[in-house]
Length: 241
Image (tube, rainbow, N blue to C red; front, top):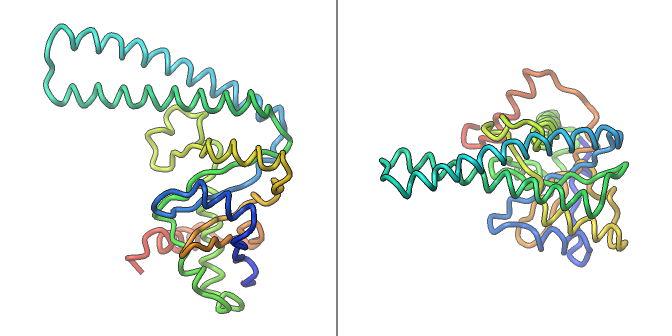
């Protein structure tokens, strides 16, 4: 596997400053990709998800109002209070999602090429690749691991699990866009600080103040489902290795 898949980002570059600004305290990093699907499909997905989330939001709002009124009239046991708290959390999450997504579409509309940017899960382990150095070249084991990482990251940025399926919120694969970073990214692209091409399918990780980009878009080989499953488990649960 070609070691050029791993690129160290210059500390004085706009990309380095951008990702450092938006990374969390645990340095989980990001996964980015470009959505080049037809604009008509993007519109359909957005309005479909907006209708679903609006319906859910209305139902939860009614439920929350009834819950608050009931709480004023009679006490409830702890399990019921926990259920109410979860309902309120889901209500806030749904409202936040609708507002952020609508704000994104209002400011930037629908583009032929759109950026997908999410925070990388803490369980996604790429240290074995970033510390492998030149051993990546010609190493079948590392090549297989990188291909599995590519497959895993593809699932982690699957738009179908973004906001168009209400049941997806209960899935362990559920995710949302990193909206503050995404809005900033579009502003930077429009101002010419960097290009949207820089956000093609890549895993970004920070260590010791340096950012490493694992350019998964370069991976072209295809693995079997069994190979992918085996190596993905090793990558996401390193303690089992």
